[in-house]
Image (cartoon, rainbow, N blue to C red; front, side, top):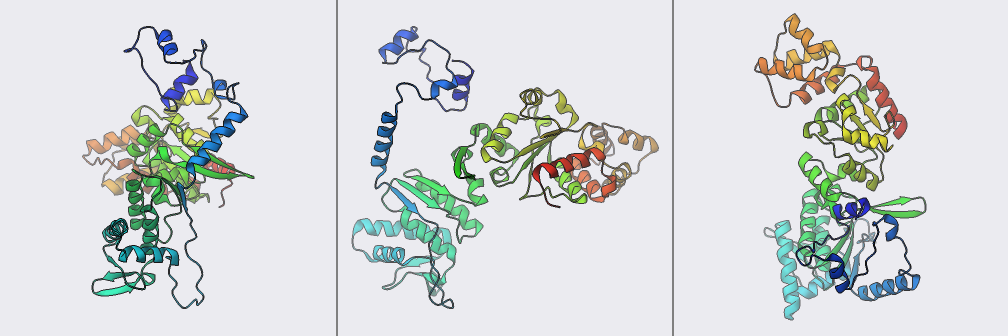
Length: 445
Protein backbone atom coordinates (compact mmCIF):
# COMPACT_ATOMS: atom_id res chain seq x y z
CA UNK A 1 0.00 0.00 0.00
CA UNK A 2 1.75 3.17 1.16
CA UNK A 3 0.47 6.67 1.94
CA UNK A 4 -0.55 7.50 -1.66
CA UNK A 5 -2.62 4.33 -2.01
CA UNK A 6 -4.16 4.95 1.43
CA UNK A 7 -5.23 8.43 0.29
CA UNK A 8 -6.80 7.06 -2.92
CA UNK A 9 -8.83 4.60 -0.86
CA UNK A 10 -9.82 7.25 1.72
CA UNK A 11 -11.07 9.64 -1.00
CA UNK A 12 -12.85 6.75 -2.78
CA UNK A 13 -10.91 7.21 -6.02
CA UNK A 14 -10.09 3.49 -5.99
CA UNK A 15 -12.12 0.57 -4.72
CA UNK A 16 -10.90 -1.37 -1.69
CA UNK A 17 -11.59 -5.10 -1.80
CA UNK A 18 -10.94 -7.34 1.21
CA UNK A 19 -10.20 -10.90 0.06
CA UNK A 20 -9.21 -12.31 3.46
CA UNK A 21 -12.45 -14.32 3.65
CA UNK A 22 -11.73 -15.95 0.27
CA UNK A 23 -8.10 -16.91 0.72
CA UNK A 24 -5.14 -16.99 3.09
CA UNK A 25 -2.66 -16.87 0.18
CA UNK A 26 -3.15 -13.48 -1.41
CA UNK A 27 -0.43 -13.85 -4.05
CA UNK A 28 -1.78 -17.17 -5.29
CA UNK A 29 -5.34 -15.81 -5.32
CA UNK A 30 -4.32 -12.69 -7.31
CA UNK A 31 -2.48 -14.78 -9.91
CA UNK A 32 -5.45 -17.15 -10.28
CA UNK A 33 -7.70 -14.13 -10.85
CA UNK A 34 -5.43 -12.96 -13.65
CA UNK A 35 -3.68 -10.04 -11.93
CA UNK A 36 -0.02 -9.16 -12.34
CA UNK A 37 1.69 -8.48 -9.01
CA UNK A 38 4.19 -5.64 -8.53
CA UNK A 39 6.21 -6.12 -5.37
CA UNK A 40 6.70 -2.43 -4.57
CA UNK A 41 5.01 0.44 -2.76
CA UNK A 42 2.34 2.14 -4.84
CA UNK A 43 3.27 5.74 -5.67
CA UNK A 44 1.72 8.59 -7.62
CA UNK A 45 4.04 8.13 -10.62
CA UNK A 46 2.49 4.71 -11.20
CA UNK A 47 -0.65 6.51 -12.41
CA UNK A 48 1.34 8.32 -15.11
CA UNK A 49 1.93 6.96 -18.60
CA UNK A 50 3.36 3.46 -18.37
CA UNK A 51 4.55 1.22 -21.20
CA UNK A 52 1.13 -0.40 -21.56
CA UNK A 53 -0.74 2.90 -21.90
CA UNK A 54 0.30 3.91 -25.42
CA UNK A 55 -1.15 6.65 -27.67
CA UNK A 56 -2.75 4.01 -29.90
CA UNK A 57 -4.64 2.55 -26.91
CA UNK A 58 -5.78 5.98 -25.74
CA UNK A 59 -7.00 6.76 -29.29
CA UNK A 60 -8.86 3.43 -29.45
CA UNK A 61 -10.54 4.05 -26.05
CA UNK A 62 -11.55 7.60 -27.05
CA UNK A 63 -12.93 6.40 -30.40
CA UNK A 64 -15.06 3.72 -28.71
CA UNK A 65 -16.42 6.23 -26.17
CA UNK A 66 -17.43 8.63 -28.97
CA UNK A 67 -19.06 5.81 -30.96
CA UNK A 68 -21.07 4.65 -27.95
CA UNK A 69 -22.22 8.19 -27.12
CA UNK A 70 -23.48 8.97 -30.64
CA UNK A 71 -27.20 9.65 -30.59
CA UNK A 72 -27.37 9.27 -26.82
CA UNK A 73 -26.35 12.79 -25.83
CA UNK A 74 -28.82 15.68 -26.13
CA UNK A 75 -27.83 19.27 -25.44
CA UNK A 76 -30.46 21.73 -24.19
CA UNK A 77 -29.02 25.16 -25.01
CA UNK A 78 -29.42 28.24 -22.84
CA UNK A 79 -30.57 30.45 -25.76
CA UNK A 80 -34.24 29.51 -25.93
CA UNK A 81 -36.01 32.57 -27.32
CA UNK A 82 -35.31 35.32 -29.84
CA UNK A 83 -36.06 39.02 -30.02
CA UNK A 84 -39.62 39.56 -31.36
CA UNK A 85 -40.24 41.28 -34.68
CA UNK A 86 -42.58 43.69 -32.92
CA UNK A 87 -41.18 44.74 -29.50
CA UNK A 88 -44.70 45.72 -28.37
CA UNK A 89 -46.00 42.21 -28.99
CA UNK A 90 -45.16 39.63 -26.35
CA UNK A 91 -43.08 36.84 -27.86
CA UNK A 92 -43.19 33.36 -26.32
CA UNK A 93 -40.12 32.04 -24.51
CA UNK A 94 -41.22 28.62 -25.72
CA UNK A 95 -39.81 28.07 -29.22
CA UNK A 96 -42.13 27.10 -32.09
CA UNK A 97 -40.60 23.61 -32.45
CA UNK A 98 -41.29 22.76 -28.80
CA UNK A 99 -44.84 24.12 -29.04
CA UNK A 100 -45.50 22.04 -32.16
CA UNK A 101 -44.13 18.88 -30.50
CA UNK A 102 -46.24 19.43 -27.36
CA UNK A 103 -49.40 20.16 -29.36
CA UNK A 104 -48.88 16.99 -31.37
CA UNK A 105 -48.44 14.96 -28.17
CA UNK A 106 -51.58 16.46 -26.64
CA UNK A 107 -53.90 15.39 -29.50
CA UNK A 108 -52.14 12.20 -30.61
CA UNK A 109 -53.97 8.87 -30.87
CA UNK A 110 -50.72 6.94 -30.38
CA UNK A 111 -50.54 5.38 -26.93
CA UNK A 112 -46.83 6.09 -26.37
CA UNK A 113 -47.38 9.80 -27.14
CA UNK A 114 -50.51 9.94 -24.98
CA UNK A 115 -48.53 8.55 -22.03
CA UNK A 116 -45.74 11.08 -22.57
CA UNK A 117 -48.26 13.97 -22.74
CA UNK A 118 -49.94 12.72 -19.58
CA UNK A 119 -46.59 12.68 -17.77
CA UNK A 120 -45.80 16.25 -18.90
CA UNK A 121 -49.28 17.46 -17.99
CA UNK A 122 -49.20 15.93 -14.50
CA UNK A 123 -45.78 17.34 -13.66
CA UNK A 124 -46.62 20.80 -15.00
CA UNK A 125 -49.92 20.94 -13.11
CA UNK A 126 -48.30 19.71 -9.89
CA UNK A 127 -45.44 22.24 -9.95
CA UNK A 128 -47.40 25.30 -11.11
CA UNK A 129 -50.83 24.55 -9.56
CA UNK A 130 -52.40 25.43 -12.93
CA UNK A 131 -53.89 23.18 -15.61
CA UNK A 132 -52.11 22.75 -18.92
CA UNK A 133 -54.58 22.23 -21.79
CA UNK A 134 -54.25 21.48 -25.50
CA UNK A 135 -55.84 23.69 -28.17
CA UNK A 136 -56.03 23.07 -31.94
CA UNK A 137 -53.58 25.90 -32.68
CA UNK A 138 -51.70 26.62 -29.44
CA UNK A 139 -51.04 25.55 -25.85
CA UNK A 140 -52.91 27.24 -23.03
CA UNK A 141 -53.02 27.27 -19.26
CA UNK A 142 -56.22 27.52 -17.23
CA UNK A 143 -56.12 29.98 -14.32
CA UNK A 144 -59.43 29.26 -12.59
CA UNK A 145 -61.92 29.93 -15.42
CA UNK A 146 -59.54 32.01 -17.56
CA UNK A 147 -57.66 30.20 -20.37
CA UNK A 148 -54.45 31.99 -21.40
CA UNK A 149 -52.14 31.10 -24.32
CA UNK A 150 -48.75 29.91 -23.09
CA UNK A 151 -46.94 33.03 -24.36
CA UNK A 152 -48.98 35.14 -21.91
CA UNK A 153 -47.87 33.04 -18.98
CA UNK A 154 -44.72 33.64 -16.92
CA UNK A 155 -41.33 32.83 -18.34
CA UNK A 156 -40.78 30.23 -15.62
CA UNK A 157 -43.81 28.18 -16.69
CA UNK A 158 -42.63 28.23 -20.30
CA UNK A 159 -39.13 27.26 -19.17
CA UNK A 160 -40.59 24.31 -17.25
CA UNK A 161 -42.48 23.09 -20.33
CA UNK A 162 -39.34 23.40 -22.44
CA UNK A 163 -37.36 21.24 -20.00
CA UNK A 164 -40.18 18.69 -19.66
CA UNK A 165 -40.20 18.25 -23.43
CA UNK A 166 -36.57 17.10 -23.35
CA UNK A 167 -36.61 15.19 -20.09
CA UNK A 168 -39.47 12.99 -21.31
CA UNK A 169 -37.75 12.22 -24.61
CA UNK A 170 -35.91 9.00 -25.22
CA UNK A 171 -32.26 9.47 -24.40
CA UNK A 172 -29.62 8.48 -21.91
CA UNK A 173 -27.44 11.58 -21.46
CA UNK A 174 -28.63 15.17 -21.26
CA UNK A 175 -26.65 18.39 -21.03
CA UNK A 176 -28.76 21.32 -19.81
CA UNK A 177 -27.45 24.88 -19.85
CA UNK A 178 -28.62 27.25 -17.11
CA UNK A 179 -32.04 25.73 -16.27
CA UNK A 180 -32.64 28.60 -13.82
CA UNK A 181 -33.43 31.00 -16.69
CA UNK A 182 -36.73 32.90 -16.21
CA UNK A 183 -37.55 31.00 -13.01
CA UNK A 184 -38.28 32.34 -9.55
CA UNK A 185 -36.41 30.69 -6.61
CA UNK A 186 -39.21 28.31 -5.61
CA UNK A 187 -39.67 27.00 -9.16
CA UNK A 188 -35.89 26.68 -9.58
CA UNK A 189 -35.81 24.45 -6.49
CA UNK A 190 -38.68 22.36 -7.89
CA UNK A 191 -36.87 22.01 -11.23
CA UNK A 192 -33.78 20.78 -9.41
CA UNK A 193 -35.91 18.14 -7.65
CA UNK A 194 -37.29 17.22 -11.08
CA UNK A 195 -33.75 16.61 -12.34
CA UNK A 196 -33.08 14.34 -9.36
CA UNK A 197 -36.20 12.35 -10.22
CA UNK A 198 -35.19 11.87 -13.88
CA UNK A 199 -31.54 11.21 -12.97
CA UNK A 200 -32.57 7.78 -11.67
CA UNK A 201 -32.98 6.76 -15.31
CA UNK A 202 -30.84 9.28 -17.22
CA UNK A 203 -27.45 10.94 -16.82
CA UNK A 204 -28.01 14.70 -16.51
CA UNK A 205 -25.28 17.32 -16.69
CA UNK A 206 -26.32 20.82 -15.61
CA UNK A 207 -24.32 24.02 -16.03
CA UNK A 208 -25.48 26.79 -13.72
CA UNK A 209 -24.67 30.13 -12.12
CA UNK A 210 -27.54 29.69 -9.68
CA UNK A 211 -26.79 29.51 -5.95
CA UNK A 212 -30.06 27.58 -5.57
CA UNK A 213 -28.83 24.72 -7.76
CA UNK A 214 -25.40 24.68 -6.10
CA UNK A 215 -26.85 24.71 -2.57
CA UNK A 216 -29.23 21.82 -3.30
CA UNK A 217 -26.67 19.74 -5.20
CA UNK A 218 -24.65 16.87 -3.83
CA UNK A 219 -21.21 18.43 -3.29
CA UNK A 220 -19.55 15.24 -4.50
CA UNK A 221 -21.31 15.67 -7.88
CA UNK A 222 -20.34 19.33 -8.27
CA UNK A 223 -17.50 20.38 -10.57
CA UNK A 224 -16.10 23.89 -10.89
CA UNK A 225 -15.30 25.18 -14.38
CA UNK A 226 -13.00 28.21 -14.58
CA UNK A 227 -11.22 30.11 -17.31
CA UNK A 228 -7.50 30.55 -16.64
CA UNK A 229 -5.75 32.48 -19.37
CA UNK A 230 -6.48 30.64 -22.62
CA UNK A 231 -7.37 27.39 -20.89
CA UNK A 232 -10.50 26.07 -19.22
CA UNK A 233 -9.93 24.11 -16.04
CA UNK A 234 -12.36 21.65 -14.48
CA UNK A 235 -11.87 20.62 -10.86
CA UNK A 236 -13.79 18.56 -8.36
CA UNK A 237 -13.81 19.26 -4.64
CA UNK A 238 -11.52 16.84 -2.83
CA UNK A 239 -12.67 15.23 0.37
CA UNK A 240 -16.25 15.71 -0.83
CA UNK A 241 -17.71 13.32 1.75
CA UNK A 242 -16.10 15.22 4.62
CA UNK A 243 -17.11 18.54 3.08
CA UNK A 244 -20.70 17.40 2.65
CA UNK A 245 -20.87 16.41 6.33
CA UNK A 246 -19.26 19.67 7.46
CA UNK A 247 -21.58 21.85 5.40
CA UNK A 248 -24.59 20.00 6.79
CA UNK A 249 -23.38 20.17 10.39
CA UNK A 250 -22.45 23.85 10.27
CA UNK A 251 -25.39 25.02 8.16
CA UNK A 252 -23.08 26.51 5.50
CA UNK A 253 -24.29 26.87 1.93
CA UNK A 254 -22.02 25.44 -0.80
CA UNK A 255 -22.52 28.69 -2.74
CA UNK A 256 -20.61 30.49 0.04
CA UNK A 257 -17.57 28.59 -1.18
CA UNK A 258 -18.13 28.29 -4.92
CA UNK A 259 -19.43 31.81 -5.67
CA UNK A 260 -17.17 33.95 -3.49
CA UNK A 261 -14.10 35.91 -4.55
CA UNK A 262 -12.35 34.88 -1.34
CA UNK A 263 -13.05 32.94 1.86
CA UNK A 264 -12.11 33.83 5.42
CA UNK A 265 -12.40 30.94 7.87
CA UNK A 266 -12.99 32.05 11.46
CA UNK A 267 -13.67 30.43 14.83
CA UNK A 268 -17.44 30.89 15.08
CA UNK A 269 -20.56 32.92 14.40
CA UNK A 270 -19.42 35.91 16.51
CA UNK A 271 -16.34 36.42 14.34
CA UNK A 272 -18.46 36.03 11.20
CA UNK A 273 -20.68 38.90 12.40
CA UNK A 274 -18.09 41.18 14.02
CA UNK A 275 -15.25 41.27 11.47
CA UNK A 276 -17.33 42.77 8.60
CA UNK A 277 -18.62 45.47 10.99
CA UNK A 278 -15.08 46.40 12.07
CA UNK A 279 -13.94 46.30 8.42
CA UNK A 280 -16.76 48.70 7.44
CA UNK A 281 -15.51 51.13 10.10
CA UNK A 282 -12.09 51.35 8.45
CA UNK A 283 -13.38 51.30 4.88
CA UNK A 284 -12.85 47.69 3.83
CA UNK A 285 -15.58 45.49 2.36
CA UNK A 286 -15.54 42.01 3.88
CA UNK A 287 -19.08 41.13 2.84
CA UNK A 288 -20.58 38.86 0.20
CA UNK A 289 -20.24 38.58 -2.73
CA UNK A 290 -16.71 39.96 -2.31
CA UNK A 291 -15.85 37.70 0.63
CA UNK A 292 -17.50 34.79 2.41
CA UNK A 293 -16.73 34.45 6.11
CA UNK A 294 -17.24 30.86 7.23
CA UNK A 295 -17.22 29.68 10.87
CA UNK A 296 -15.30 26.42 11.39
CA UNK A 297 -16.23 25.89 15.08
CA UNK A 298 -12.86 24.12 15.32
CA UNK A 299 -12.23 24.97 18.96
CA UNK A 300 -15.72 23.79 19.96
CA UNK A 301 -15.49 20.52 18.03
CA UNK A 302 -11.85 19.82 18.84
CA UNK A 303 -10.93 19.70 15.14
CA UNK A 304 -10.74 22.37 12.44
CA UNK A 305 -10.89 20.00 9.42
CA UNK A 306 -8.38 22.29 7.72
CA UNK A 307 -7.57 19.75 5.00
CA UNK A 308 -11.22 19.74 3.86
CA UNK A 309 -11.58 23.54 3.86
CA UNK A 310 -8.26 24.02 2.07
CA UNK A 311 -9.08 21.39 -0.57
CA UNK A 312 -12.50 22.97 -1.17
CA UNK A 313 -10.97 26.44 -1.57
CA UNK A 314 -8.30 25.17 -3.95
CA UNK A 315 -10.89 23.32 -6.03
CA UNK A 316 -12.98 26.47 -6.27
CA UNK A 317 -9.83 28.35 -7.29
CA UNK A 318 -10.27 31.16 -4.81
CA UNK A 319 -7.93 32.60 -2.16
CA UNK A 320 -8.54 31.59 1.45
CA UNK A 321 -7.52 33.04 4.81
CA UNK A 322 -7.91 31.89 8.40
CA UNK A 323 -8.34 33.96 11.56
CA UNK A 324 -8.20 31.87 14.72
CA UNK A 325 -8.00 32.39 18.50
CA UNK A 326 -4.66 32.19 20.32
CA UNK A 327 -5.42 28.58 21.35
CA UNK A 328 -4.95 27.54 17.71
CA UNK A 329 -1.18 28.00 18.12
CA UNK A 330 -1.02 24.64 19.88
CA UNK A 331 -3.39 22.83 17.51
CA UNK A 332 -1.81 19.85 15.69
CA UNK A 333 -3.69 20.55 12.45
CA UNK A 334 -2.60 24.18 12.38
CA UNK A 335 1.03 23.27 13.14
CA UNK A 336 1.01 20.63 10.38
CA UNK A 337 -0.11 23.05 7.70
CA UNK A 338 2.30 25.74 8.92
CA UNK A 339 5.20 23.24 8.71
CA UNK A 340 4.11 22.30 5.19
CA UNK A 341 4.01 26.04 4.31
CA UNK A 342 0.38 25.75 3.22
CA UNK A 343 -0.62 28.15 5.98
CA UNK A 344 1.77 31.07 6.38
CA UNK A 345 1.43 33.30 9.46
CA UNK A 346 0.48 36.89 8.61
CA UNK A 347 -0.08 35.88 4.99
CA UNK A 348 -3.10 33.58 4.94
CA UNK A 349 -3.15 32.66 8.64
CA UNK A 350 -3.77 35.13 11.46
CA UNK A 351 -3.78 34.01 15.09
CA UNK A 352 -5.13 36.54 17.57
CA UNK A 353 -2.33 37.30 20.03
CA UNK A 354 -4.52 38.41 22.94
CA UNK A 355 -6.78 35.36 22.97
CA UNK A 356 -10.32 35.37 21.57
CA UNK A 357 -12.36 38.09 19.90
CA UNK A 358 -13.93 39.22 23.21
CA UNK A 359 -10.47 40.37 24.33
CA UNK A 360 -10.46 43.00 21.56
CA UNK A 361 -13.69 44.78 22.52
CA UNK A 362 -13.39 48.37 23.77
CA UNK A 363 -13.67 48.17 27.58
CA UNK A 364 -16.30 50.87 28.17
CA UNK A 365 -18.38 49.79 25.19
CA UNK A 366 -18.35 46.18 26.39
CA UNK A 367 -19.58 47.13 29.87
CA UNK A 368 -22.24 49.48 28.43
CA UNK A 369 -23.57 46.79 26.07
CA UNK A 370 -23.81 44.12 28.78
CA UNK A 371 -25.62 46.62 31.02
CA UNK A 372 -28.15 47.64 28.37
CA UNK A 373 -28.68 44.23 26.76
CA UNK A 374 -29.01 42.23 29.98
CA UNK A 375 -30.02 44.97 32.45
CA UNK A 376 -27.11 44.19 34.75
CA UNK A 377 -25.50 46.51 37.26
CA UNK A 378 -21.84 45.74 38.00
CA UNK A 379 -19.86 46.04 41.18
CA UNK A 380 -16.37 47.46 40.76
CA UNK A 381 -14.90 43.98 41.33
CA UNK A 382 -17.18 42.38 38.73
CA UNK A 383 -16.26 45.02 36.17
CA UNK A 384 -12.53 44.55 36.77
CA UNK A 385 -12.89 40.78 36.62
CA UNK A 386 -14.73 40.85 33.26
CA UNK A 387 -12.17 43.15 31.64
CA UNK A 388 -9.23 40.89 32.48
CA UNK A 389 -8.39 38.54 29.59
CA UNK A 390 -9.42 35.91 28.77
CA UNK A 391 -12.86 37.51 28.97
CA UNK A 392 -15.20 35.00 27.31
CA UNK A 393 -15.56 32.53 30.18
CA UNK A 394 -15.81 35.35 32.74
CA UNK A 395 -18.67 37.04 30.87
CA UNK A 396 -20.43 33.70 30.52
CA UNK A 397 -20.03 32.95 34.25
CA UNK A 398 -21.35 36.39 35.22
CA UNK A 399 -24.43 36.03 33.01
CA UNK A 400 -25.17 32.62 34.54
CA UNK A 401 -24.63 33.97 38.05
CA UNK A 402 -27.06 36.85 37.37
CA UNK A 403 -29.51 34.39 35.72
CA UNK A 404 -29.28 36.36 32.46
CA UNK A 405 -27.47 33.76 30.38
CA UNK A 406 -28.68 33.17 26.80
CA UNK A 407 -27.14 30.80 24.25
CA UNK A 408 -26.62 33.64 21.76
CA UNK A 409 -24.80 35.90 24.23
CA UNK A 410 -21.54 35.95 22.26
CA UNK A 411 -23.09 37.12 19.00
CA UNK A 412 -25.57 39.41 20.72
CA UNK A 413 -22.89 41.25 22.71
CA UNK A 414 -20.29 41.15 19.93
CA UNK A 415 -22.56 42.70 17.32
CA UNK A 416 -23.64 45.55 19.61
CA UNK A 417 -20.10 46.28 20.81
CA UNK A 418 -18.67 46.27 17.26
CA UNK A 419 -21.43 48.60 16.03
CA UNK A 420 -20.84 51.04 18.89
CA UNK A 421 -17.06 51.21 18.42
CA UNK A 422 -15.45 53.96 16.33
CA UNK A 423 -12.58 53.21 13.95
CA UNK A 424 -10.16 54.74 16.47
CA UNK A 425 -11.35 52.27 19.13
CA UNK A 426 -10.58 49.20 17.03
CA UNK A 427 -7.45 47.38 18.22
CA UNK A 428 -4.34 47.94 16.10
CA UNK A 429 -3.81 44.19 15.65
CA UNK A 430 -7.32 43.84 14.20
CA UNK A 431 -6.69 46.81 11.90
CA UNK A 432 -3.46 45.23 10.63
CA UNK A 433 -5.26 41.95 9.85
CA UNK A 434 -8.04 43.72 7.94
CA UNK A 435 -5.57 45.93 6.06
CA UNK A 436 -3.54 42.84 5.18
CA UNK A 437 -6.67 41.21 3.76
CA UNK A 438 -7.43 44.36 1.78
CA UNK A 439 -3.94 44.36 0.26
CA UNK A 440 -3.99 40.62 -0.51
CA UNK A 441 -7.42 40.72 -2.14
CA UNK A 442 -7.10 44.24 -3.59
CA UNK A 443 -10.45 45.11 -2.07
CA UNK A 444 -11.98 48.44 -2.97
CA UNK A 445 -12.98 50.82 -0.21
